[in-house]
Image (cartoon, rainbow, N blue to C red; front, side):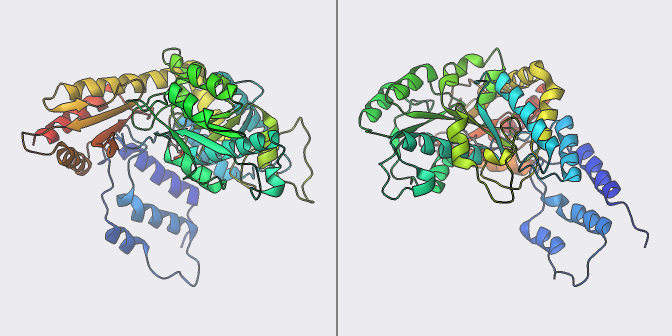
Length: 462
Ligand SMILES: *Cc1c(COP(=O)(O)O)cnc(C)c1O
């Protein structure tokens, strides 16, 4: 058999997928049984030709692919991939650089350095902050909270890296009642527990209430971390940083901001006001694979003071020679040791959009969220549950008298998912079942919104 070029096979499948993305049903079509039947089987004793493996893999998984990269996927908060980021990401695999330190890839190190500088500039964060490129928002929160744990315990005279938490001064963690689940997971990984977190009451949009924060902090003696949010995952709401950061700092607390998607509002002159006061926090987590439309996986951990960041994450071994202050060793800033050179795709995305392009991307998604909310609200029985301040829309569907709106909303969501015009999911907000519609894909147009809104309205009436 003629040895086929595996990259040519991959490229052909990539082109076909991209060409069909707009038209394919948005949700997955294959079932577990059909996918397993196409993919399962014994591990072969002898290897199979690379091009054949890739060709057959691409065909077998096709029915199980979700068009998350396409323009009408509104579930969770996902985002697609910009052409420049995709091209750079392909080359990242081809180059196969180990981005752990300068010696393993000067290219990865310098590109991260430049991309980090651009991010701090774009998001109006301190130019001296340290930046780690991690897998996503979860690890960004983890990384930042590891730095926080180090800093607040060091101030109390405790070296948590050396001595762990055994016998350490009690550390208080305070978070808004609507904090993202990944904050709790990060606290779990850090040995801080989830039950000990003091929850601060939030308002109808999910914003931490400043007075409640003050009252909670009054009961926290000693090392304290406050977890705030820029962009609630349901409503898109932002904590009022101008109020809460000074309250927390007055008590000596570290303020971490989970801004997985919301932090991008800082890049838009129109939406920047939502982030007012956020620059004064101590650490920020943000995703690149969501709103910046970089391929999975990529998140960014940013810490105002590099010293606790490095102290919490850095590691050394006899065979590693630190590259010195002027050269970036990426492993100083992330939990991973060897890892993918994520900076290439971030660099490419930022350069291809430019400052104006990022602002336009944010503005367009928010405008589309408003358009969707208006279109749906025009339908009798449709209630928009949140103030649409950013890119998130929460919808509840009321049926005729006697029918439970929660059940009806669930039915509408299921019908929309089966219909395939667009895809979105459900959530619970303030005890009520709601449809959650999220806008973060760079390719979504007004026509996509109109077509999707028409489908949702039709399916809600049927
Ligand atoms: C998505 C999200 C996270 C988690 O980010 P991943 O990239 O999925 O790990 C954390 N916080 C918020 C607000 C999010 O929207």
